[in-house]
Image 1 (cartoon, rainbow, N blue to C red):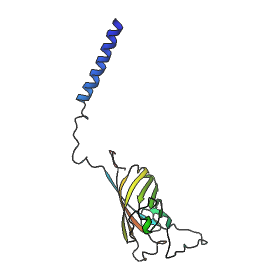
Image 2: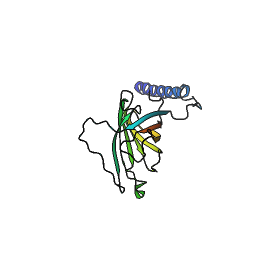
Image 3: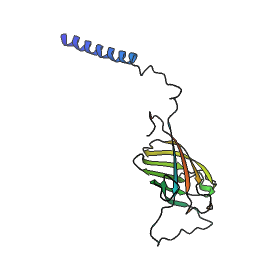
Image 4: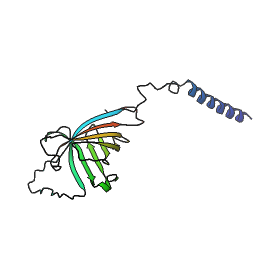
Length: 187
């Protein structure tokens, strides 16, 4: 009989402790402030450039007027100069044909490999109008950019070049990222 009384008393005290902790906990009664209701935003400003190849036996890419896909591998740098610090890579596959405008294949991947950021972002290029400035959607990320959403503004950084010279163009990329369910901004 005594073990049953001890067991029932222990279970009752445990239930009482859980109820008291739930009622008296300061976190459960804390109302969210108006400043904390929106997820934090992160703004980045980067440049996409053609990699500088030391070898002279590379051949330029030939273009035709009826090109059906644009595949690229570029450097992601901190500044527009060729000597700027490389922070990652920009790779993509875009089909600029009207029938594939809504294609899921039109994605630009921005990969980061620095002390501050390690991971990648996926930028969806569904509505590319071949203008000097494009606003695209960030659809997700990995690593430091896990679950990132937001938008990316791509603009020609060097206005002396023709916008049709996509092989040598430098693009300025402004990223506005938000991270749902995250208590802090990435440092």
